[in-house]
Image (cartoon, rainbow, N blue to C red):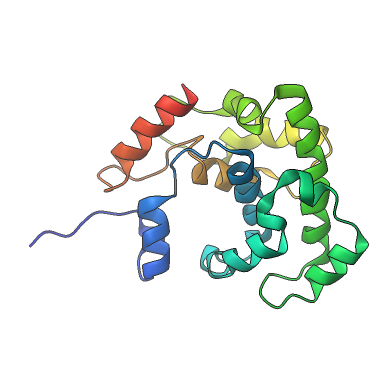
Length: 188
């Protein structure tokens, strides 16, 4: 009996394995999916992805299903509500960053038509052998110049991995080929 090869980070948790096999590295195309992925990566900073994944449904509920238009209209009462929500990671700076970033996302949509059209310019279609968060520096720098918060290169690279802007599935991984085909079709 042969074992299925997967990226090492998803081992030991059925939730991580399912996320890896069905979502990670596959292209996100809608504003909701892209904004949601970047928001979750912002909250993950300094924590384990499993912690965020376990709270993802509560994040969706608390952040209006990651609807950019709705979250951009959040004010202090919403921040207070979210700080009291034990279902999410209660970090004022990250909550306020999510609201700010939704406002910046609205600006990107006005300029580019959709978040997908903006992020597509940062897709790395030919992956270097030694991929690293250095690939995220141009996107991180551009987002920061547009007023986004909590979007350093490590956070942005994790986002790029999750939405298929890069393909970091290890060679031989059960999800690598499918992710590669889908991302080249979506971002190419």
